[in-house]
Image 1 (spheres, rainbow, N blue to C red):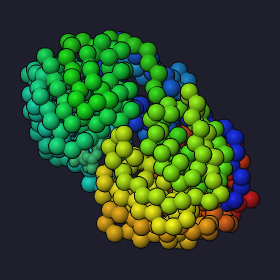
Image 2: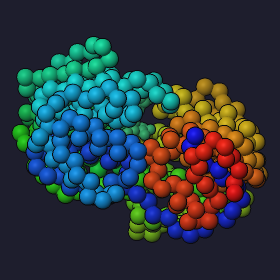
Image 3: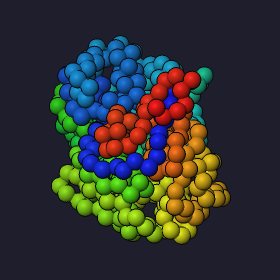
Image 4: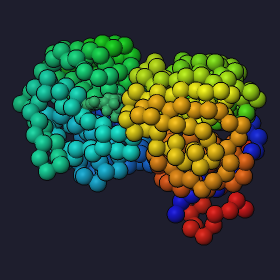
Length: 425
Ligand code: UD1
C-alpha cells in the first residue's frame, strides 16, 4: 500500500517551483487533437491525470510523443476512432473533454458518461445543453454518450450554473462550428483563459475568455502550434497554506500572483505575510493567526479546490472560523480524519465550523480525494508526532513530486510502498 509517513514539526523554509496547471493541461491536451498538424505543448505537469489523458489520446490513434517530462508533441491527423474507452473515464473524469474536441472536429463522438465522484454528483447537463444548442444530437445508452451532427451551427448559450467543464467543452466544439457562438454565464477560471489562448494559437477565434461572456467565431480548420501551459494555481495555493499552517517561510516560484489573490487575501486577513513578486509569492506564517470565514465560489472567488487546505490552516488559528462549500456537496469528507488529529470541526450540510487549536497530533489517516489529501499532508507536517497517510494515489493525480518538494523545504516526509512499514525511520 502506498503511504506517506510524516514526522511533524520540522521547520519549512526555502523555495519551491510550481509546475504547469493540471486542469488547464487536461483541456489543452484534448483540444490538441483537433489539429492535423504537430502541436507542441510545454510545461505540462507530470502527474497521473495528465498521463492517463495522454494514454487516452494515443488510444484513439493520435500520435503522442513525450519529448521530456514536461513536453509533449501531439498530432491528431492519424485519429482512427471517435470512441473513448470506458477505462479512461473511470480513471479521469476529464475524458469528457473528448466530446467537445471530437464533436467539433469530426461531428461525431462516443464517450462513456462520467459517474459521480468522491466530491459530489457532478452532472453534465450543461455540457449536453451546449452541444444540443450547436445542433448535435445526443443519445445516451449503455453508459455511453453518443453524439453526431450533420453540421454544427453557432448558437447563443446561457449556462444555468457557472461550470468550468461545460465552458471548456462547448468552447472547443464551437471553435469548429459554422458562425458565431456566444456563451453567457461562462466560467472565468485561469485555465479557461489558457485553453482559449491555446485554441486561438491553433487558429480559433475566441474572444472574452476570462469574462462571463465568450464569443467564438467558428473556423473550418485548426493548425499546429507551440504553447506553454500556465502555472498551477492550486498547487501554488497548497504551498501557500502549507507555509501559513506550519508557520514556515516559503518562496513559491513560477506562479501568476493575480491568480492567487483570493488565497492571498484570506491568508493576509489571518495575519500572515504574503509578499508578491512578478512570478513568485513568499508566504511567512505568523505565529498567532486569526480566525476568518471562507466561502467557495467560482473564480475570482475562493476556489473549491483550495477549501480543504484553507480549512486545515484555519483549524490552527485563534477563534471560530466558518467555511462554506458552495460548489460541491461532498467536500468535507476529510473532516473525520482531521478530527482524529485533534481538530475541532463540526460540519452541518455544506458548512464547517472550526474552532482553532494550537497543534494537531499525528495519527493514521486516509486521503479521501486529491485536494483533501494534500490538506491532510499539511496537517501532518504541523502535527506533534508521526502520521501515516494512505490513499495517496489521489494526491499523485494532481501534485508532481509532492514529497520531493516538501523534503527540499525541510519537511520530514517519506513515500513508502510497503504494508509492513508504518514508522518514520
Ligand atoms: C473543474 C475542475 C475541478 C474544480 C471545479 C470547480 C477540472 C478537470 N476540474 O471541475 O478541479 O473543482 O472545476 O472549480 O478542471 N454542474 C452542473 N451541470 C453541469 C456541469 C456542472 O450542475 O453540466 C455543477 C457541478 O455539479 C458543480 C458546479 O456546476 O456544482 C461546478 O462544476 P464545474 O465547474 O463544471 O466543475 P468541473 O469542470 O467538473
